[in-house]
Length: 285
Image (tube, rainbow, N blue to C red; front, side, top):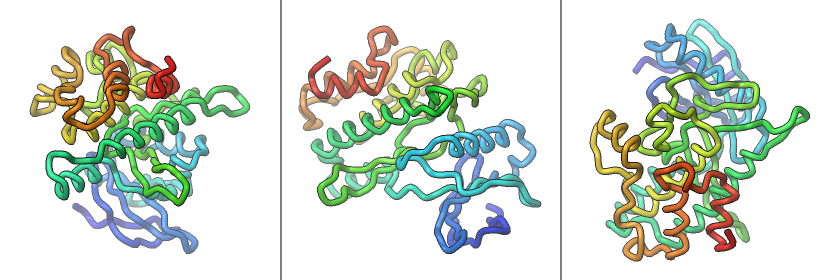
């Protein structure tokens, strides 16, 4: 990986890692630590990758919510485009699940934490989906919810677990459309999106978050296939594998029923809004 070069207005603190298209680093700007994303060198001439980073910039510049990074700055220099955003505190859900499996074995994340996390995550998603500005509903869609993009923060005294959502490269807004062919990360993809019949929308966000919560409850990804092609077929033709989600996972029967409804293969049979999921968790739907 090529050395990370900080923008002129920032000082490098540490490189955090690299995703499929971007390198992510913690930088200091005006005495405060933030996150800086740059395209990896081999994507500098990739128009789609550039548009994705520009879209993340546009989304973060419009969305004001503590669960979403704030846009601090953006631009382009001799090393390509970059976006600087505030740091949302928390551990990504994938690392949290792996940590519990390492310490507790197959039992993984405690059932009480999974159920609490589900409620907080869907409450937060509902608030994001309902954001408005002077022009009306923002129509925010994350487009790529999964265990790597859901951050779980420690509970503050007297408060529930906190969550954050990051990586809005496939995000959409009322005036910021997505691109053809986007679907998110397998296997956290609704069947109709996997088949290319439906672009990611708020209902697809709900499905993806439900699959992400299932990952925490099961301690494994909700699929049986290996490899991207096989996983795409499984997502498109069968949907999530929820075998083992029940008493053995320690979660309540109401929670299991709710998650199965949120992950129903047919969209018409599914809970398609975050508020509907919350109502089902409360048993009032």
